[in-house]
Picture 1 (cartoon, rainbow, N blue to C red):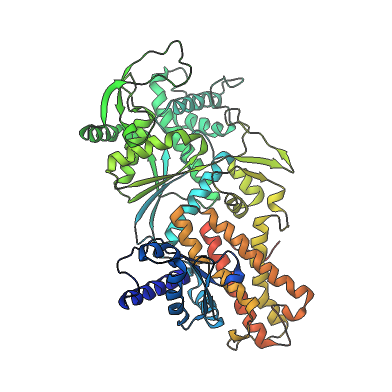
Picture 2 (tube, rainbow, N blue to C red; picture 1 turned 180 degrees about the vertical axis):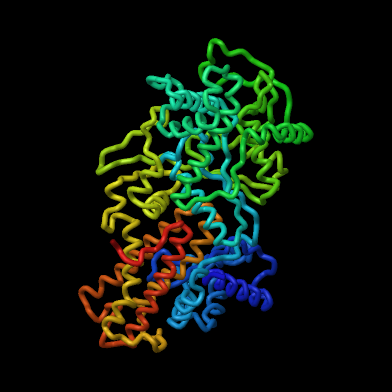
Length: 576
């Protein structure tokens, strides 16, 4: 239980006592009561809105109710004062002993400090990456991969049971194009001069080894054969090769999925038919005419009767076709069935999609609500583009032209940890600039360096203390830490609260933001020793104080490690 949750429980107890004393009407809902750090630290350590949100239903004014609650909180051993502020907020100041105990708790819990039972084992399916299997991972895929993987780790840390899933779009026309491209490379491997890659095929060199493998396996059997004889075979072989490449590239980032779900297998299994019949049984599917496109209607547009899902009943702006006029499934029809397949084994679904999929969010959420009867919620996080730069100069990439920047190349150049951290330094739905020069710069303006440098400084302290001959074997007397130093503990104690809030919002970037602030607070405390040697963490002539300060630093280091672990980033022991 977080510090803030403990004090929320104390407030509950105070309200129960007031009810028992007849000073508060029983049964008033308390859901809106919050306990959080005040915006201005000078106002105290905790702030609660309890009187503000309950006063009206209690038939009194906020300050009057606060005057009843505050004394109850002031009686707690850990509370130094509970003061009423403004129209009825209560600001609480905690004594040094509580913060010393919190520091001990951080060290005692180690890697589990901040871990939560919030999820209570609820099953969450997080689907991310899900790029078409037509080539290696490039930087257009990278951000969604990291955002999804960090969110999965965050949810696990908060007590959820998580499944990491990749949806393989292997049933569309782009996979036919991939197979034809591989066939061209297959002929090339057998000695044919293919010249320039024809327009519309994938030109990347990554298909050359695929062509060689096909040549070794089949010889010249399919060189002049009709397409119908080899297309499906080459699709299967090439998609498998691309998935091996994708797994390898994601592995460079430390990303591993539990499930790779095939769209082609989904359709072949009859799952889409089952989803359609489920909706039909609920009266949510009908045969009708699709509305004309909004705006200027094309001259060749003709109304065609289609199988439509009543998505307007769930807030969508129009009903959506599940089948095309030729009887094949639409993307929406297959996606609806796929989400039903996931929902059958989960309590909640989270999709990490590129921002270009924004237009399809509402219809898929409508389908999930309809198919599951509202039992399973779908949250879609849209990930904006990454703009690549090198020393300020933009880098352009085009997958079809074959000149894209691969994820593997970027990881090899700047390292896994840098890539992962940088992908979380902005909200997922905001554009992100990635400059190859700046992300490895040793500067406080580089968030990766700033956080890693804080941990490296902390890691150096024990080594330096031993070199100075400081005896670290005796227990640390934490009462020697003053209010200024304990302010670092107050910052660290917010970590469990940040974890729960980030997990509930499905926003892993909050961890990166928090670590940046925590590192900043630590660096500020460290730098005080530059002007005043007595403020240094290591004061060789005062081993008692040094031991206490090293415990403080160790606690901050532990919280940094815990946060970085959620992000999938290793903590630096020293800076190169």
